[in-house]
Amino acid sequence: MKLVPVILCGGSGSRLWPLSRAMFPKQLLPLVGERTMLQETVHRLSSLEVNLAEPVVLCNEAHRFLATGQLQELGFEPTVVLEPIGRNTAPAAAVAALISVASAAADEQTLLLVLPADHVIRDPAALTAAISLAIPAAEQGKLVTFGVVPTAPETGYGYIRGGKGQEGVRPVEQFVEKPDLETARAYLESGAYFWNSGMFLFGADSFLDELKAYAPEMLAACEKAVAAADSGDGFLRLDSDAFSACPADSIDYAVMEKTERAGVIPLDAGWSDVGSWASLHEVSDSDASGNTTLGDVVAVDCRDSYLRAESRLLTAVGLEGCIVVETKDAVMVARGDRAQDVKKLVDSLTAAQREEVKLGRQVYRPWGSYDSLESAPGYQVKRLEVLPGAVLSLQLHHHRAEHWVVVAGTARITRDDEVFDLKPGEHTYIPVESKHRIENAGDEMVQIIEVQVGDYLGEDDIVRFDDKYGRQGRTD
Image (cartoon, rainbow, N blue to C red; front, top):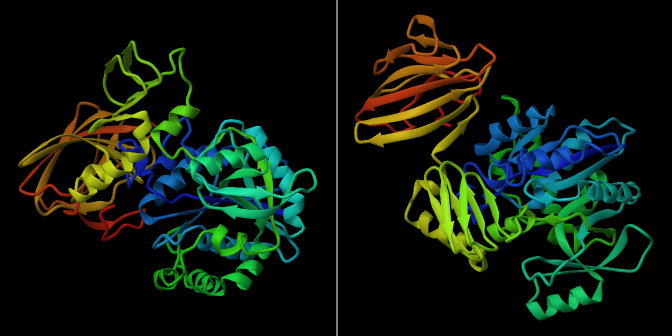
């Protein structure tokens, strides 16, 4: 038997704006520790005493390099599947099952452990213990979901009613939608209901069999999307036409609510889906006054507040039950009891076509990142950070010239037919329509201050001639 972690890495995490952005969402951020949420999702499985396969990660095109790089930092070599369009969790699991079955040995049973990449687990040992208890049931054909033992009458989660059964996995009697407060209180008092975590363990063949029985159109579309997938640049791109035609549904709706093989195992592991700043505050360490302070924060007479500074001093006086989050380009202030309404704020910014919804000031690329320090009509100043061993594409710009000053590391510069190295304090000029690239051939980060001058400074003024990341003709 092999256990394949299937990591669902889609979503934008808009309720955690301005830290979470469409191009750099919450699952790729270190929200409650040094590791990102994606990294924690995979790392916490390392203590499982099973044949653990490399993870299968499902994400979109925009996040492919970040997701891959973060897992490679931990020593994993994931299979990264790119979804051309979001189709919910059931098609994602079907794709992972088809890929895993195709790569398995003839006599090898494959179990899939389906996990969202954006959940917090405060007690990883409790999770791995629950997984270990669920494995025998999954090997026998059960489709197991992990039901979180509720700690409050939460109205923001769906619930699962578990039946009486043996120690460990119980039969599922009912899936129920998000309840009103009175119903949620009754669920909590009964002791028979669990929060629906969206985490699953089942055999790949078992899931495909149930999908064939209850959602055959979905299975057929996924089979076509995988059969026609493109893996030319190291990512598995599902066929766009086939996958776009796939019905969109969750694992619960497509299979779990219909199958007779569903089981639930209680999970008491300090779980949170971190769906808002308020829920992040709940799972974060707080001081004696109930305040969570992160970064350069000075708070006087504040209580029960979440105060986070990313780039500068944040000060607060007399706040109670508030959320203040500062980033390089935005500040968000909200009452804690209105945390869910941050999404309305993001909707307003989206309607106003504000770029802050998509990107922060620091933008990540497969070679590193750039930070836009200053801009005005006719010029822009950026700080580039190029990772060891990384190289930017060979490119030119039609509308801007660039002046580069190296401030750290040694940069290997290509400028038309010239190739030369620049050390800290040295600089060069890249004229308009000159082919150029930067390479970091060393083992320390290269930092460059770039001054762009021209009549148009948009990121789409890039013509790529060669790129190790397969982005010819692209601007990402």
